[in-house]
Image (cartoon, rainbow, N blue to C red; front, top):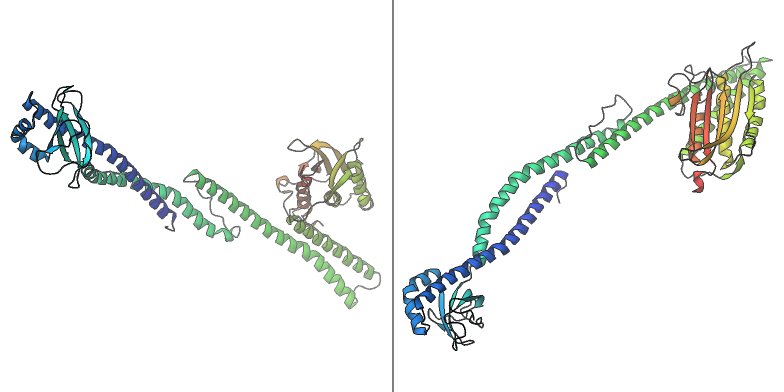
Length: 481
């Protein structure tokens, strides 16, 4: 079996062409052999009619022998053996040569003078001959007589000769027509696959530089589907590589600031620069930056756990109002310290749903922390910014009953073009990168929502602010309902 696809296509077409030639040749052999045998019987009938015409009303052996003398040259040229039969079932007498049939002759035709019966007989010289039994007497004669004309059965050999002269021409036509078609078929299939193989070799470098244009979707529909999927895969890989590069750059930035602060204040404590009243402030700064690093490491650990499909959820029955109240209780002190008003809008009626309690707590915590970071420091003389926690009944995209949890703020909202990247890992709407967040909170929110069979959305509010909503099915996908 050839290793290349082109070679296999060529072999397949060659074998198919040979199979077609053999099938056509076999069918033609059967048909042509029958036609050649009918032609042989026709020649025997013509000679028999001549003999019957010469004999007239006579039908004795001597009369047949006399008529034979005038036809001997014709019979010899046609290689026809002449036998005489007197009476049904009696053995024939050879008038030319010595070969006699080893099989019983067909019955003498009862239709009268000139009628014939055809058969294929074996002779004692080992040959098979086509034979025609021609009646010499009228119908109803007491002693029916007939002549038997036999000629070698050459129908098979003649048919084979005809096929050997014809089939090479048919094969040549197939080669002239099928060869270019096979080449075009192989080229239309192997060309796109070869380009795909070359492009695949460059996949490990995707996202490291200028990306090549997408491969053209050419060839058969299956090859086009593979090409389109490869283009999508390469684009997604390049996007993932760029996101990975951005994530690493952001992590370096996020780690550099707290490490610089910790290192500076620690050195100040060691060399005595931070002494007296300055020492507690240095220690507090070190503690704050350490907590910031812990939050960053925790966010990275959460993402790593979400990437592991084996990290399943443990759903339990929850109430939306209770979940919002717990989130409010966790952040109310921090919000007051920052001068932010934390408002909870719980549904009037009980709104229950099944979900992983720890996952829901992380979702709301990430959303509230993002909102606190978004509203920024309170400006003296201006109204205190507000953060709203709300819940209501909703429907999933598939139409299943769901609960919508949302957190909105009075901050500046997402910058232009930021909504579509809000859930990207390491994305932050603060271009100065001065905020305390890691840019991983919303990515974690979306992953946890999807783990429950739901989805997360983000929108800007008018005249200012943003809202992040999470739609969770009442019965999560993990329960298999």
